[in-house]
Amino acid sequence: MPQIPDSQPKVETPERWHHAHAFKFKTGLTWLILLSLLLGTFSKMGLDWSLISQKLPFLLGLRLSPDGFIQGAALTIMITACSMFFCLLIGLVTALGRMAENALAFGCATFYASLFRGTPLLVQVLIIYLALPQAGIVLGALSSGIIALSMNYGAYLAETIRSGVLSVPRGQQEAALALGVSRWTVAVHVTAPQALRIIIPPAGSMFISMLKDSSLVSLMGLWELNFLAQSYGRSTYRYMEMLATAAAIYWIMSIVLELLQSRLERRFAQGQRR
Image (cartoon, rainbow, N blue to C red; front, side, top):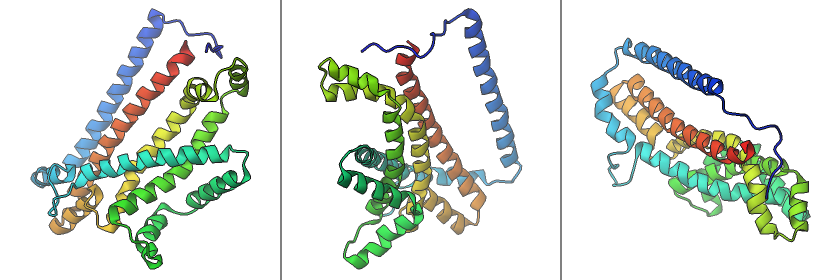
C-alpha cells in the first residue's frame, strides 16, 4: 500500500556522498585511536599473555566442559539466543494483551509486566532456581536462567512493541480495512513494517543487555563465560587477565549484535526513505 512520505526525500548529491564518507572515515579513525590507547594501557600492566592464550579456547567455548557440555562464550550465546526467542513470543503476547479491550487479557498482561519490571532480575533468577523447589517445582540451572531472562525482558519488550504499534496512524489501518483487506494482511503489510522502525532500536539495546545479563546464570554453576573467567582468576590469582579477556569477548559479541541491529534498521527504513 503506498505511503505518503513525511518529508521530501533527500537527493543523493556528490557533496552529500563525500560528506558521508568523510564522516565514516573520521569515526573509524577515532575508534582506532581510542582502541590503540586502550590496548596500550593494558600492555603496560604486565599482563600474562601466555595465560590468556592458554585459557582463551576455554573462554570462547572451543573446548567442552568436563561433563561434555558446551561452556564459555558458546554457552552464553546459546542461553541468549534461546532467551531472545522466548522473549519475543512473551513480549508479543503481552503487547497484544496490553492493547486488548478484554479486561481479563488486559489485567493479566499489565500484572505480569508490572511484576517482572518491578523486581530485580537477580531476585527472579534466585526465586526460579532456589525457591520454586519448595513448591515442588524443580528446574535445572540452564532452564531456570532462560526462563528468568525471557520473562524479565519479555515484560520490557512488550512495552516497546506496544509503543511501536501505537505509533502507526490508525487511519492507515482503517483505510485498508475499508478497502476489504483482511486484518492479518493489514497487520503484516501495513502495521508491522512501520512499527518495526520504532521497535528495532530499543529492542536491539535490550538484547545486548540480555547478552550481558546472561552472566547471572553463573550463580547457578553454569560454566558460561563469566563463571569461567572468575574460576580461572581464582585458580591462577590473575584476575585482570581473565576478566579483561571475558570483557573483550562480551564486547565483540555486543558489536556483532549492534551491526545486526543497524542492518535491520536500514532494511526497514528503506520504505520511509522512498
